[in-house]
Length: 227
Image (cartoon, rainbow, N blue to C red):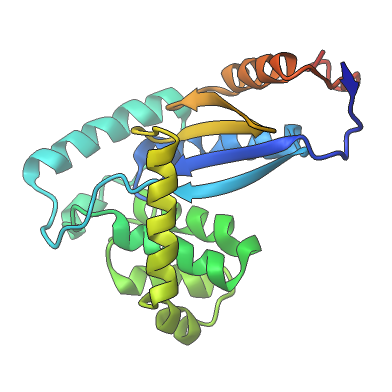
């Protein structure tokens, strides 16, 4: 086995998600705990495109499915949801505009991509803001420290669209069809760590199994979680 120091990079943890994915919001605490427990993994966020391009508003059937999912996800994860959104708004069915907003944050400042996505999660799921409106994207941009005018100008740029298409292509390449999903890449090997929502215990087991398969020895006596 190869002894690895705590600061050595080991692999890439690709998180496939969508800012309008309810289970992705439920998964947020687990993902952030992963960042803390596995600093040797470089996390990359990939926009999966939960629902494709459409100018149509959500149907009553889709809204009913989403509201039902919110209740289940709250019960399973404890993450809060504000059902008042549905009395105030009828968002578009497509999630791609919200994906473009996250990518805009990525291109302007990579370090702010995740804070921006979290802000968009909160706007939709807890602040009852329409996640398909431009004013929501600019509100969140200002809240996390972007210049709103610069953000607005970049939002419709060809660079954002190109990056979105690259994310969608990568999602297809890895065979991802549900969100959230997490793939760990170590060298030339890819390990599906989370095919959908997983609690932290499941994530630990999957990553440790990947480490074992890759013949990586990684021990943290102070935590007792790794062997």
